Image (cartoon, rainbow, N blue to C red; front, side, top):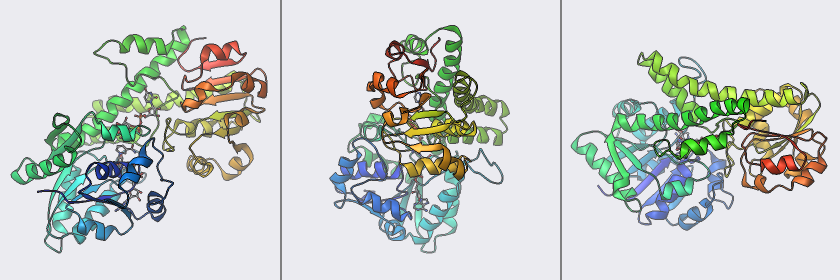
Length: 462
Ligand code: NAD
Ligand code: UGA
């Protein structure tokens, strides 16, 4: 089966960039990204994309209108496609059975029902969203039971491993592409049809094929292992602070062991992002559901340590500022969950800002890519009252405005521009002692001290 027309349900952080790359690399395939969110679709069709990613504008521009289309007409997009990616959200369930841990699969289910209703002939359905292992069984059952036009389907799993901030590079040169399918003649043909799309630009040896369940599970496990490394090094950051060891030196020393490797050993105020926490909680829930409580407890600890890391950072600020931040101005440098993205989902900054506001601090927040509206919404969602935001939060246009009259600065995102801040200027603007809490170890720590700051850097002893 040769793929001529692709549709993707969900024009979010995954659907948009992933489909833009496929369209750019396969000019002969029509790629339509469909979403009911009109504002998002309009933004994809404009000069201001809804997702900030270095290099993404050029990829989208190279194919938009040629073979890349963004639309709210979901039904027509499904009807015209040979292959349909499902890239809708799978957030943590906030109600009922499994609340706070299980994945909420309502968007997956409604997408499957719509595909069944609209489709004719034969189509390949691809799970691109991150889902619990065995979800393909549910999708297959829904498709089989609800197809008035007698359509037939093959369901594949093709999880996405891109990281935000490096999405374009990750999509162009992925470590691997994983495709899971049924071990039948039809299943193998569908896997090959999808593999041959990726093979246009990705070497065959990097395209890994497995059974459906291995593919679905591998995605959760990959995120769990990555997050586990961060919690591991963050746990050591606390020990470094207590002993005078330097966590960056420890990371370097252990990372040079080729069995450990150097990546994902950067201590921080905590990991954020829409997926690590959600996917580990989902894994924990699955383990419990399969009656493996010891395995569940093991992985739950990765999230607990992360929560502790965020809380202890706030505690450090409050204790250092003479046990009260009430009425004190604290400049917040960075709100995104990592650099080079405008995404703030589960950003540690939300947790830190909420707790500082509960201590009645005045926050002066600066982020180069995150809008005032997003920060406002995030704080409200985190439970901060609109009155407290109105009285105690200021949105700043640059780091110096945030530092003006501040008792302390806290770095919560590792934006590159923070590496080259004018330290004498910052110092001049702040109350003395001028405290800095570097939650990303991004500022030049020796220079901070040389310029008179009272600096705390995550994972560095006094
Ligand atoms: P997102 O919230 O940015 O986008 C999801 C989009 O799906 C929304 O715009 C929503 O309106 C749309 N949608 C919901 N139901 C729909 C339907 N029936 N038809 C069409 N559109 C529909 O989410 P995201 O960050 O792109 O993540 C999507 C999935 O990919 C999740 O399962 C996530 O775990 C996974 N994932 C995300 C990343 C990442 O970096 N964000 C990386 C790998 C995997
Ligand atoms: C992560 C994975 O890296 C992707 O492979 C995966 O596809 C994606 O989740 C997903 O499923 O959504 P992402 O969350 O976009 O990607 O970004 P990461 O680079 O993994 O960073 C996650 C968080 O960990 C950020 O807050 C980052 O600052 C933090 N981090 C990362 C550290 O604190 N230390 C590190 O060494 C690395």
